Length: 268
Image (cartoon, rainbow, N blue to C red; front, side, top):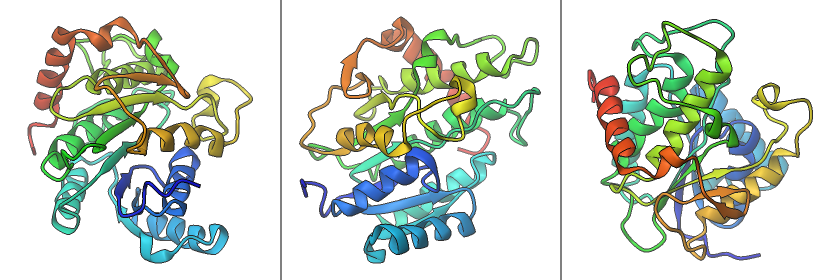
């Protein structure tokens, strides 16, 4: 088992279940210090305890952290805490995600809920962690995306989808935005579709999925400094493939940054 992750610090969002939990487990087993993010302190601590009890992970390698991505202020507080306590972050895994609800739902910040949780919160977190994300070789951001980003379109004039809402279109938009964001030149980032797995998002895809641990393997591989990456690259499991055309257009990247800055700007 490669220990090229020992001594490295990795923040995994949405690490209390599914692919995020399995990713945290594999990273900790390979010697990384894992900042384990959950929606509440209780959920984050419970996940850490479970890793120690069931996976035999060294508790000293785990740091539970909490922020509810439905509130951008909590995301901001999380970023401040990480920069304060871990001024050197090797890898950020933007994994937390929710399925868009049946009914159009806005957060207190005024954003469509899946657009905020799946993309805007990660945009804010990543840009705020930029000073901590090491520029050493191997430092990187790994966005857990989805093949559904290919069906998505960013509604520039109505990103909150107030006029026309469909949960699948909203979810696809959030994943497309996350995938476009990987091409942002400010940080070295890649996107990965871990495949359809048995997680809370399965209903969006169908009835059967692979075990979450299988999807996590593809995420962990991209966290390893031994895996060379190109900024903005997109992986379908372990294979590098072309993302949706929008994800490689400079114009779209710039336009998305402007939109995201505007939408998180009232607190950032």
